[in-house]
Length: 551
Image (cartoon, rainbow, N blue to C red; front, side, top):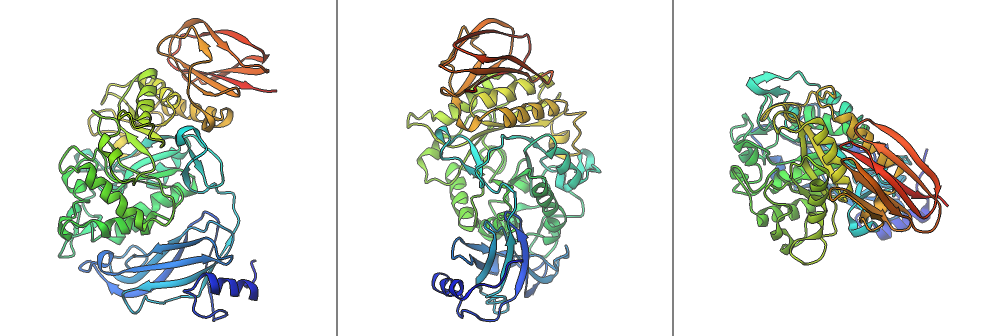
């Protein structure tokens, strides 16, 4: 139990948090949680219903200051109907993620509505320490800022999966998919580190439950009315997915526009709000921006399909949502197959912290080179120095004609290119788990191999110190790729049989291990190795060799 603030701390708080008008004023505890949890605080505001537009018309934010005077966060609130999924009510909420143990003071509650303005101001939230790793932040100390780290300084490697419209609960033919959102999240967390999905219905809409209201207060899938979000949809579906993903420390990669239908792709056009998507962007930031497991993708395949967006528009939307995001939430946009990262973004004011590409690839070298070339910047202006993710690297199944081994090999390649990757299960066009969910590793058979590779990387390899580099190896096949932490650690990936590869190891003693990603077997090839080491690559689509200095 954390005791009251001391007089000295109170004076410091009064001086450094000027919006707390009276030091020692009557206060109340309004919430408890742990560091990097999400504490939800309920407020009572003006009664709203489906015919109202609180996301646009009600300005509501709070400022929370730690008792030590730092840090301090400005967090927007949102209308949540009756707070239980109902579409009418006076419940407004603020979601706060404490980043430090202790007492957090609600130093300012601002609103343009008298009932909300000042409500609970001076109250506090009590937080305890935790072992949660926190937010995902581009690691400035990694080579070229190409890797993410967590708030606590730890690193986990990312391979992801895709369930575009699994929140709707429907599949092709207008039939219920019978998926369970929480079970899908839990299942994915056992194999992957990230799940991509849309916050709305997209291709397979729910016939009754809709993400928005139209101007007459009727439920709709149309993104033209993105300024009128339906609290019931988000309360029952998206909240469940994001919260469950947080419980499993699975990244919830939220696609907030698209991917496929005109209705879902109109969300950022916001025609019903005179072309202003700011209410929707603020709503997403308020409702989900305090979750340390949330990433945001502005749009899927942003510059193709109907409607499409220009690079200038996307960058503009990115700068808008960043104004509302209180924490370092990863933010980017999904590009199209015929390009890597668009060159136009390099000349626009910065807004994204990572690069998403879509390049469906079946082999190791092309998967590695797509990541590396995106990071390098073809404009000749120097490296882009941001994490790079191929978010449609290989959808396994007849839809794209990618076999299990295609998917396995290409994911090893993405790692060796110095980036991350995402898969999906696709038995036909717009069919399968990559749209409907119902996660099943017996159908998505590459999932266990991808898990093996991810766990191998996390357990054995200091990948966040590495960058693509083959210089220590000779007699390599042209298809092989490697990374190095010079003089400390090296990895080499192979995809076919090849004899007498040579590793010219720097002075010291080295341990050499081989990991078969297809057969999921680990073999120690040598310990206390010195100098030149000669070895063979077996006849397999995906093998990872690891060289680590041990003295």
